[in-house]
Length: 383
Image (cartoon, rainbow, N blue to C red; front, side, top):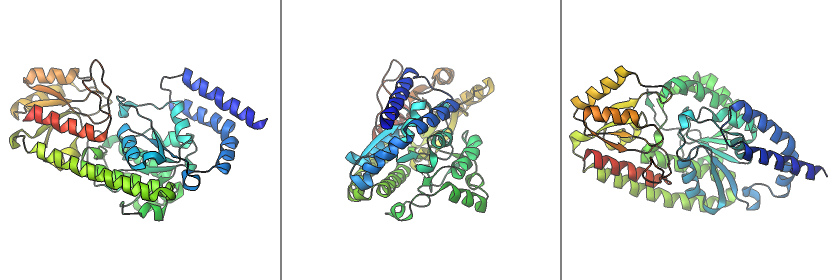
């Protein structure tokens, strides 16, 4: 009888979630998570007792990725042993994203959560805590990479980065050596709080940094290694499969890296100048030899001033920049205005996945496809 009542409660909650498809504030997420825990906690516990996680029963490992490209990487490494869902969907803008109650439920049902980190997903810490953060392994995939200082993300990364260390459970500290995560395991919130006190906090350690590490392929390989190690830790029985899948995928990324480098060589050196819509490509520029000449919108959460627009237009003209680049998840009106004033072309770049629509020319649904589309667009605009 008790189990039947619990199932009825869970079914009613799911119905309510489907009715409310729009994004809700985090307070609503927290309320939803509390109800979910009260109504379904004992039922979920009973299920775990009878079946358990993939590590003990052969069931699939439930994984939540914050961003679509991270979900793509997790599927490549996990194969048939994982069930992956992404919080941010293709076309969503992560800087202004607000999670929904169903996102809290997805995290509550997951064994591993993969995030980019460095303050990009400001909403994640509260979401994880609302979903029972102490029981979740949260892996910050950019951990251990050398950050680029500055950028519009710096103003919020300090606070968000410190919060992410003081609460929840994080795996993936240090370098992603072979099997390191499987040996060390995750890190509890208390351990992170102690580390923050000893080092003066991660906010001071990292400072103001740009979080778009993944747009350099070698950095993406670091992400893949972190995913591999975390999945081995969550599901030791699948170690051989995870290692083989990761090895195969890393080989594909090596080929992708070579392709990008070869394509860049076809662009005249004096034309390797990037004017992008937002400050998302410093790691790409550093890796492949571009100069970052300008950014249309310094802060994705604020409008550019007329003075900033005029200054960028003048820079584009004076530096003889052949083209500027926009991103489909942002309004292109400002980029179009600058391009018209400077008499240059506009071409698309992709920092996340998108779906074809009236304003988007193509689907971008894999990391490799996204990176190939980016360099091809640069060759067309700058070559």
